[in-house]
Length: 335
Image 1 (cartoon, rainbow, N blue to C red):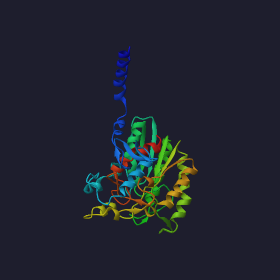
Image 2 (cartoon, rainbow, N blue to C red; image 1 turned 120 degrees about the horizontal axis):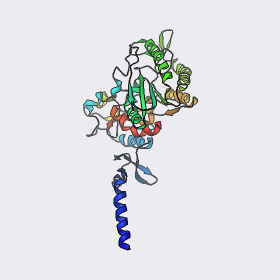
Image 3 (cartoon, rainbow, N blue to C red; image 1 turned 45 degrees about the vertical axis):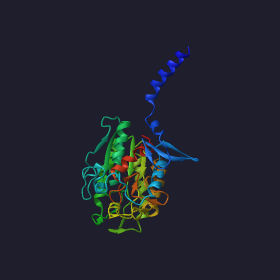
Image 4 (cartoon, rainbow, N blue to C red; image 1 turned 135 degrees about the vertical axis):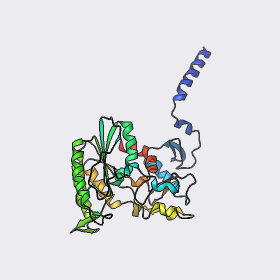
């Protein structure tokens, strides 16, 4: 009888063990340095102990940032190498799917599950295209067909704003919006994700930095009210941090000290405008995702996190960093 039970136990063990999650094997490794990663797990402090935990929330990102801030040199296993960082950008940032400054056109840029019965629209400026690699992957897994509508430096507010690149009022942005908005309304997407970066107001044909916060406070809620009427679920992704200097230039210097490339969260976090956008999102019943916590600690924003170079310029995340954040974004988006 004992042999029979032993044989049954061995049989069950042989069946069940291979089906255990791959991450279980990682728990055999010692979790000693908080902020390190292994097999999709992150080493985090839990009470007085450190344990391997699933990497799908901002706690893991913050732990990695804290660890990154302790280093002042480029890691030997940097992804990508410092010479390739400039080109490590979303392929959706090409001039076809991120409409150029002087152009007024609406190209068809589709992603996700092209046969999916659910529809997701991603709408905004170059930062929308920046996030597309992760959203494309998430949408494929969850059965959403994705429509990307993006124009360089064109935010969501429908008032004419100033173009630094053209050095004049950005009428092309307003004209482009008037072409895109009816298309979004027609699609009636199940999920509408929007994101942008603030741009200066225009008063009497001239740039007015003084009036910009007032413009955003007045016009951004109006834009979201309109957009929320087009969809069952509106998600606003706050603007990611903007570094106070070009990250690649700083880190490429001979014997570069990464501590000198760091930006302060107060300067980089766009807090004034993100606060306005968060309030507007919640005001129309939407979801707001704080992306500053995805690249900055409470006070500082490093240029390398988990051995990944974060920015390919001063304002945009590398494709490698966006893809690293994928599990966190998937959970935050809830799609």
